[in-house]
Image (cartoon, rainbow, N blue to C red; front, side, top):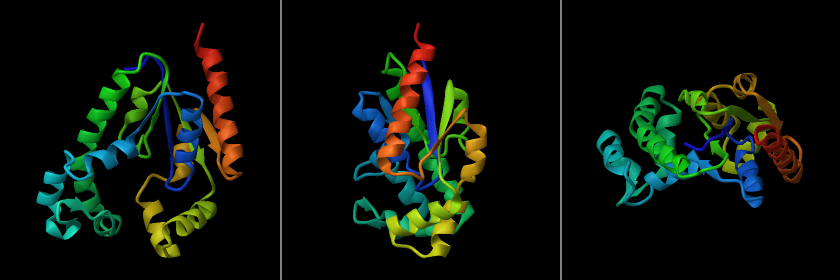
Length: 198
């Protein structure tokens, strides 16, 4: 494991991707659980056989996972979501750990469900991307082209962002422009490196 791990979390559509892009642009090593999740559920991915066994052919187009069909199933059903998480999380977390172990210096571990999975225990500190729920709903509807009801369904499938913020050591408000949010996270990284490095 990297000698200093900063967990980065936040709710859906709260701007985590913009923050990780900004950090990567200055050379910060980032392990992104969302990217690993997409890799293990891509064509030929390690999680696909168990997903097919649990949910059947209806969530597949041939050999490829139909992500929209799967999302429609799990966001409306807590039990099915828990089943999918039980299949995918161990595979994703094992790969993330392998990647973190390969980074000798400080690293950022970006995980949407950081607290839900108890991964804050593996981090030296946690940063949370935060916007008020009204803005979260607006961004999610705009991004995914969905109704207010569907946006709320997705938001409610996770721990409330405000709760994540309260559990974190640092809160990054991302309701400004992308450039403003990027500048905030870069500044926070630089100050943290000054604090932790002799």
